Amino acid sequence: MSRSRNVRHSMPAELLASNKLTAKRYRFFHPYEQKYRSSASLTGNQIRIYSSTPTSNKRSQLESEDSQRSQASTAKSSQRSPQKNQQEQKKQLPSILEDEQCIEARNKYMGQENPTFEEEDPEFLKVFVEHMKAYTLDCASKEQYEEGNQANILTQNLIEKLHSIKNSYQKSEDEKIEYQKKADAQKEKWKQELDEYDQQTQERLKALEEKQQEEIDKFNNGWDEDTMRKYRKPSGQLLNLWRMEKFLAKQKQFEEAERIHGEAERMSAAEQKQAQANVEKDYKMKLDKLEKKHQQEKEKLFKECEAGKNVIITRQSKEEMQLLNRETVVNFKSQEAPRKNSPQKECGTRDLQKKKYSQPSVSFQFPTTLPPLNPPVQQKNKEENNEKKEDKEEQKKEQEKDNQQKEKQENEGEPKKSSSSSSSSSSSSSSAENSPRKSEKSSSRSEPEMKDEETATPEQNPDEK
Image 1 (cartoon, rainbow, N blue to C red):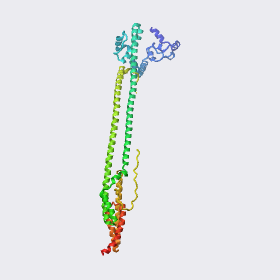
Image 2: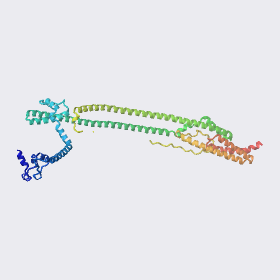
Image 3: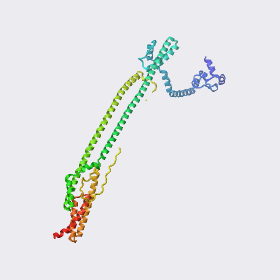
Image 4: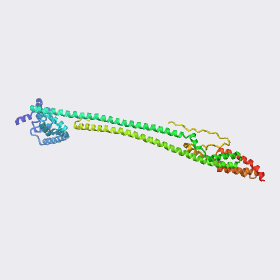
């Protein structure tokens, strides 16, 4: 055998090429050639023929080349290690046929008629059905047909059980969705009902407020001139003073008439003030009574609306309890079907019209009523206007005093007649100071009286002489 090897080893390259020998066949002929040509598949023309006794240098060279190749191969193997590890891990995974729990369940349910699997978890049933499918095929491959038939029947029972679980869960989910839709619709209906009732309450309240405002406007407009006339009746004492004043004026007793006139004016002002206070008192009392009535009407309306709303809320609460009971039933049904097996987963007002009066002419008819009174609604504006008028009158009187003083200084050298006229003017100015609120009517009366006094002084002078 050794001889034949040497012969074959010493065959020339041409002969190897002609025989079409490959490196794969030739590498078994010599140990060094086997290492050197382990990764190549060469033709005979490319093969180097070594002698049967290689030298030490060649041997060391070949060993170094072999070490380099081994290092390169280890590096490549380290790069490919993750993939190999994954493959090894896959190979190391146990077969589903070796699962102990599945084997225990198989031994338990095999041979039973119509097993219910109530004690088993649905997730385990999914694994168990795969185990039984594999076990059925394993029995068929081993020609264990009776065992395979029982396994197939158990597999079909498992599939039906999983379908029933899925269908029951789907049904419970559909019921839950349907219930949720009805519950949302019912809640929206309740909310809409309360909103409509609140809107009706606001409309009733608005109508009541408009009605009350019309009553207040009518009440304010009722305090017109006709209503004020009954408060302007003068007292009997004031009427007597007015009669006496006119009588003295007819008798040309002007000094006494002036005194009576001033007294009558003071009494008239006092009675006017009292009448104005009576007007305001009556106005406030009647207005308070009207406002109290309006407040009672509002409170009554609020109570009625609140009672009606409470009735609606009570009825809705009962319906909500029924809805919650239904929800409890639906949730209980959904819990019976485990969620783990679910598929991949919802007045018009009118203004006050004041009557305008013309300025009365000088006559001896005494008045029958008090001076005009202001309506309480416009009393504040009237007081402000009176204050402004009083300020203007005071300024006017101060100017008159200054003018009178200048006239006195200019008329110091004139005769006694001028002095008497100046004294009468000073007396008239003093009387004007005592009665600052004298009306235009009284001022128009005082002018002819002053003229009469001036004409009467020359008649009295001869008697004095």
